Image 1 (cartoon, rainbow, N blue to C red):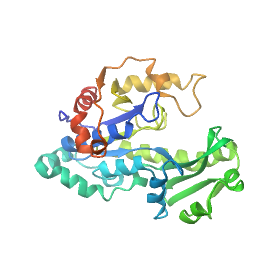
Image 2: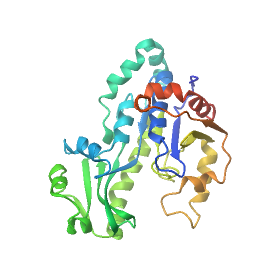
Image 3: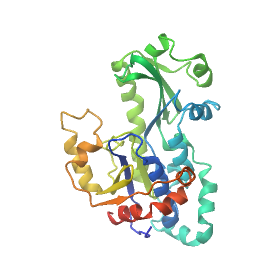
Image 4: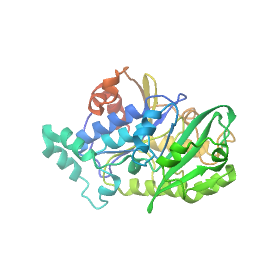
Amino acid sequence: MTETRSDDPPVLLVAGGDRVDAGKTTFSTGLVASLAANRGDAIGVKPLAGNDYWFDHDDYRIATDSGRLYGKDARRLAAASTRSLSESAPGEDSHESDRRADERGSDRVDDCRNRAEVVTPESVNPVHRLWRPTPGRTGLLGDTDRTFLCDRVTTPDGDRFVVNGAAEAEGLISDGLADRLPLRDAVRVDGVEGLNEAMAVDHLSAFDRLAEHIAATRTPVVVESYADIADPLPREGPVEPDAVAVVDPGRAQIYAGDRYAKARAVASGSPREGALEEHTGTVTEMIEPLSTVALPALASDERTDPTRVADRYNAAYEALVAAL
């Protein structure tokens, strides 16, 4: 990827098209690795993520073995990141990370991997939701055949859990889950109104804090959205993406950040959209991409290695940087 030098490190948004499993995390981890190789450091964040107790049981066990709740996407982004947001000092000289990249030379990738060990999944993913399949049942959030069990929200005072009290009363939260996570003092909600109240207190505050940290950092940041949500950060917050990649299987469409943000603002007033979230398709139907780049299919060993993804997806990353 061509090195870019600007006074302000870029914030690059990776959103998904219509399909949930679009390859956003693979694209994002490769982008973090590419930025780190050229700018010295890079951070990947996923404000909201979720996984399933049944379908993602291995990932669930990995996290809850230590009394924590996070998913594979956050774990991969944390591993690809070279530093946490809290370590990226706002007062750092704007070319300091570039200087570090020049000094690292051939050792910079190994150095990034060593330092990534201190970046936790929770630090890049402030809100994580755990689901379970419930055939024939509509969950509290209106999802058919699945029910949300609990949320983990990272706060300045530590992790806080919000439990679906209705699911708990129906025996959908197993004793094993209650033993693995600190749910005794969790907030219990029995309906959408109660969940909205809890989200207004903890979830939105977590997103606001993350946006403030991104705005203050002197390190390039890759923000990965979830599902087909256009942008997971607060609409009225301090962060606007400098460039956007909308990823579908086999392609990435590149958009100018300011035009994407304006289209998102228009979409927020559409009756088709919710109060807090806009879908990617509603935004992209208003604007034309700057370019569309083909993404080659990757083998499993390539997808899990950010440096190899960076090499295979280099053309897309070049186009994204050109949009800055």
